[in-house]
Image (cartoon, rainbow, N blue to C red; front, side, top):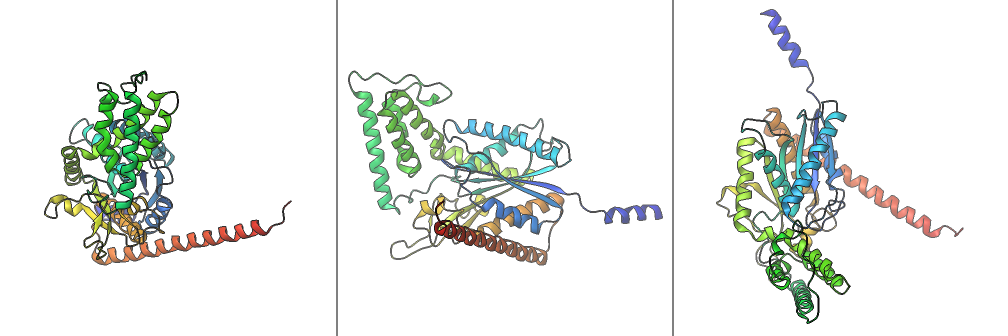
Length: 406
């Protein structure tokens, strides 16, 4: 008995093992490696300061082509993530494939759909329902992801831009129709099946007609892509231009499949309930601004307040963005989002809760308050560091400007 007590006391005194926490960011449609700005590095600092016994690494999934089928992008991401997990586990001394690395997926806009589909693919690919999840994803966090589609008022509330985008779209579609309807104009070569299979059985004009709603609704990005495609049409290889534009439109067509959107969202909630994978989505919201806007504005469609999905959606207020599109694209820039720092704190809190849940720890209200205060201090420190870097850059610019020419 005494021996058992001694063993228990000894075990209780042992430090917790160092967790490896990988936070992976995935950009959205037409995004780049820099879409998240300094947000990942800030978050890494906050998490390191507020979670004991953890090594945090925030990384951004390399820029990828947002075109073709979404599931193809999901497969590429899944391959990349499994390779990264093995490499990081080996480097951390836990053995590759051991399932020791805890992973958080963070997706912005359509990157959130990619993250969600990757998570569901990993869950569904297990040999049986009792098998552990690997890679060990503990949270799936989305930022302004249109899980239920784009809000129909986005362009209504951005009238001048809507008119500009619609005008551009009409011009592009008109140009395409005229090009392919001209007598003597050769038909574009048949695109590879893997590139635009949906359009392979239809005439070019019919294919464009199918994607016109996307061009009008997705806002700037698709239309800009279509306009760029028109530049190709003016060149010799008409087929390349058509393939380029329709392939990008194909990627965003999922935003208009309401049934598939609802099923994905319900599946994510089920995964949290049954697998313990924390699911959260932060959505941008512009507060009412009478008399022009008497109600709040959002970029995405929100679930009904009475639905079970509503609890998984958290508002991220932005009072300085001009419209929903600017709020959406500037979500990770403190200069265009005055809710930037609060977004960082809430993201850190969601990740911390996922880590603690995995450890079987339920924190008290007092502990949570202390950690929130520590996170705010850590976030404030990153702000000071950025201000110092900006000041240093400005001073360097002045020195360079006043230095005599060699």
